[in-house]
Image (cartoon, rainbow, N blue to C red; front, side, top):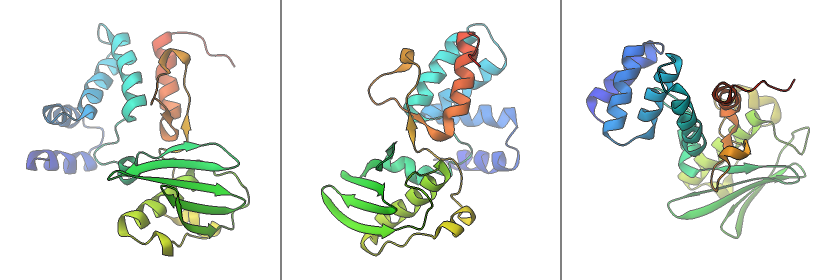
Length: 215
């Protein structure tokens, strides 16, 4: 990242709606091969309804499945994205990710969250949650805690917040997990919609198709 990009990101943090700053950041990202740069250009074309905007919308729908919608100036869930956590479901809730060539699995079942490295289970942490399901906000906090523990080498001593303290955690928000399927026209191996992108993706999808929504 160049010093100019850092300056633009700092300025954008103060003025997130500044179209000129977003355009400049997009150009800088394109220069260094970051797909978020293309996303910004597509978003601008769609918002302005320029000629060919539907093609731009279709391309953005694909990019959002492959990389998620860009979060700028900085992505608060960058650490989770580095692991590429995917999954969800129920009974058990299960997420799989990898970093530096090592596969990790996080599983939640019967109010116990387990963390495994490959086939080796390293931690079983009881949780006082009220359900065997995880809300997206709960999943985001827990995955942040696990990811931090993995990076810091303390998985076997993993401690997790109690249920009453989860909403106060800085990662309490809808994040990348769980993953969801999408319209069959966009289904392909490795393409899953991140939880935090669901509303925006489907809104763009309906604009692109111009089909009435079933209510």
